[in-house]
Image 1: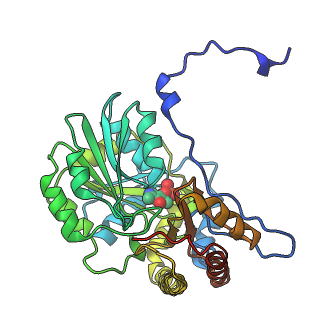
Image 2 (image 1 turned 180 degrees about the vertical axis):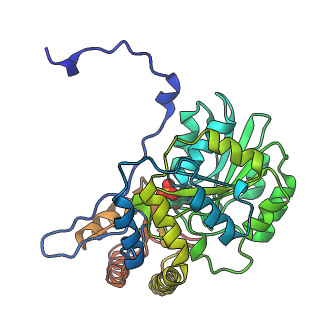
Length: 371
Ligand SMILES: *Cc1c(COP(=O)(O)O)cnc(C)c1O
């Protein structure tokens, strides 16, 4: 009898039964002869800058050594570039890693985490891992957070509220004015996480000035990442900006030596090369405007997006649209029967998206939801 056929008596935590599986963006694939583009994971389509790649190569020469567990140099570089004390920074293996640290530091079984839905799919996962409950507050008709409803969803069991701005996968941000008002109403015992994974792409008016909002509020923290605008998704490095008590708790709950030495070096080099990276971000932002304008011109309802992706609220046509895109070489991300998200990628990929979307509307004229 093979080992795999034996029953296991190992006692796993029952909380694991409640943990949804993370659905990663699919790898690129296309019919033969068609160019393939992966626009399913909101990655930066540009390869690493030559200067960053050089630092990565050099750091690779020392991987027989453990990384700096305290992540000292990167922490100092972040503190300097953000204008905050170094003790306010806590790093982790991507901001998903940091979010896991947040939940591990705050939630016992039965506690509640309030967040919007649809929003980032890691939220219910990291929450369920702690045995805590995800309280999902639906978005409004314009795919935006309903902060009043989120405030109303806070109970005695609520430990954390996550505000995702801009919201993945739908695109809109909350405004500074809205967020400030919201924070005035949240009890100071509840930790508010402002997840700004796409902050570098934001161009809208009254954008949240999160570092201003956290400064005088010990229960507010900011979550950021090197995965999107900085193009280091494969190296797994993100960070929190929080008051010392919270930041210290995040250091305690971090995976020891989690942020590896190559990631630390590459993140520092990327901070130094931000002007160069910003040009790429600006290009993607210009492409975003071009795509949104073209899609709206075709008759689509596309929510305002401040990130590097667009959302198609297709309902039960989501699968048909994803399949049509795949035929054309575009691998995008389908969210069941809610909708489909497409990352703003290379110009060619964006052109294919516009073409597929136009053809789809011609073939399925009743697709666009009324708002
Ligand atoms: C991509 C993303 C993250 C960042 O993930 P990393 O773990 O840093 O790669 C965090 N929050 C949201 C909303 C995201 O979309």
